[in-house]
Image 1 (tube, rainbow, N blue to C red):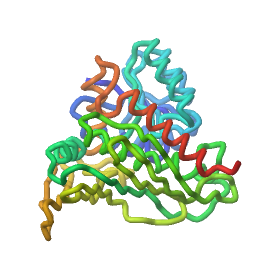
Image 2 (tube, rainbow, N blue to C red; image 1 turned 120 degrees about the horizontal axis):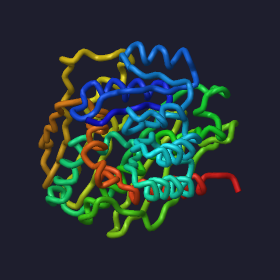
Image 3 (tube, rainbow, N blue to C red; image 1 turned 180 degrees about the vertical axis):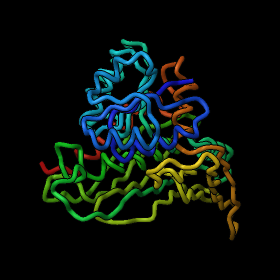
Image 4 (spheres, one colour; image 1 turned 45 degrees about the vertical axis):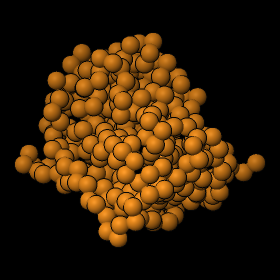
Amino acid sequence: MTRWGILGAGGIARVFANGLLFSKTGRLTAIASVTESRRSALAGDFSIPRSYSRYEDLLADPEVDAVYISLIHPEHARWTIAAARAGKHILVEKPMAMDSREAEQMIQAARQNDVFLMEAFMYRCHPQMARLAEIIRSGAIGDVLAIRSPFSFSTPFDASSRLFSKALGGGGILDVGCYPASLSRFVAGAASGKAFAEPERLKAVGTIGPSGVDTFTAAVLQFPGGIFAEITCGLSCAMPTEAQIFGTRGRIVLPNPWLPSSPVRFALKPLPREATFPAERILVWADGRGSPEEVIVTADRDLYAYEADAVDQDISRRQSPAMTWEDSLGNMRVLDRWLAEISPA
């Protein structure tokens, strides 16, 4: 049983705490936050026995095996490195870091201190992704040629929000663009029999808002084997989130790629133990069929419980195949290139 501590007490910390209620391998032991009101509320709502006002105190707690770092983007590297030095296993929110240089430092700290480290791309831990890879590798849609995946929402400009602060890692690319970048690399990898693939070329256009962050942007990635991916993200335009994969003999649609089987993503109070988790559908049009085959992927726990259990399952290996160090580093390099493409000279 993995004993978890959480650094930070914002909305995503509550989501993870809720997910842990349904984990088969983990329980929540401690919370640390510099904001007393949030810390007290989270500890009270989820009956967390140990509460700290300083992150260092949680990292020194011998009753904590692993930490979930839910802090804002610029704090990921600092506290991942501190947690590694404290001998704690680490699940750090996406994006792993502000850039690939920081990500390399975090990975090096995990390696030097012999601890587990994983970037919290929770959707990668859900059985939907393993099933998707099986369908692609089966040749059901022939050779993969194109991938299309958006993750874009609309929110009013707020100069005080981290989403619109360059110093706090705001902008669409770091906040949500990391998802379609990751999915595209996963699909291109599955098409070539690998865990992931890296793009040979990347071209992008985008809009930079008044605070200096990207508010809407699209990129085209070219992978080995002639596979292209169109990825879109932003803060100023709401788009359907379904992902589409096109091949020489058909196509695949994922209606819910990012939050499969996750009612807790929208529940800030603890869910009842008897909660159920929706199945997901993968739609496969093959050989010119007019209607798709529905591949049903069932879930016996919440998405974030799958994520926590993936950590426990592979702690001894220090990495999870759901999101390896090289995969995270490759994704950060794509985000670096995407940001560089649309940044003013």
